[in-house]
Amino acid sequence: MIFVYPLDIDFMLNKEKDRPLLNSWIETYKPNIVIFDPLNNFISGDESLNNDTIARNTAIALNRLANEFSCFPILTTHLKKETDFKPANIMEMFHGSRYWTNPAASQIAMVRADQKKYAAAKKLHFNCKTITNISPMLILRDKDNLWYEEISLAEISKAKLILKDIIKILNRKFKGNAVPSIFEEVAAKELGCTKRQIRELVKGCQR
Image 1 (cartoon, rainbow, N blue to C red):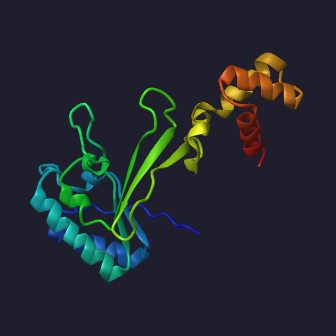
Image 2 (cartoon, rainbow, N blue to C red):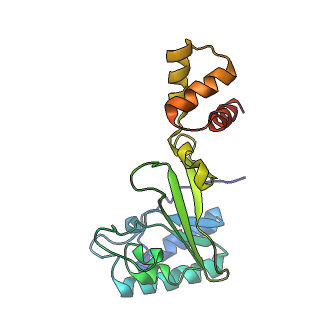
């Protein structure tokens, strides 16, 4: 079971005087994970995420916090625009100082699998200090349920399959009532996918 508590305290990660507030919050709720999302919300407005000194000192403080409270801190940030920056490695695209991410035990970068279409299909890149040669993972995002599932490259067209689109076809073509095999064939043709993908989506909605 997972309990989610909001960080309903007014503090900044880069302000040493604020750290007792965070420590007290962790002692109260005893979370296994604390997510700072997005990172810039927890850095003073007059300071920059690109400041190496701030990033280094805060990362050290977070590592200390993790060890003291057996708590796993997660920082989230945006990626730099590729039009402005051509990285040798995807992990170099994290916005802000490299000292935010370099000390991390693991790094995950999420990008669109295709820049022009299939917005719901994402690719995850991994960089871990304890494991090497982790292949990128292709996943499908369900916006309604905030859920991700791993898919193969051949299934990427599932990224444009939306339940309401299937319902529209069912109502428009069949007045809400259709033989499953015929419906799957028509829906697959209209949505540019396979009959199996339609069948799996319908089954998923029936669970």
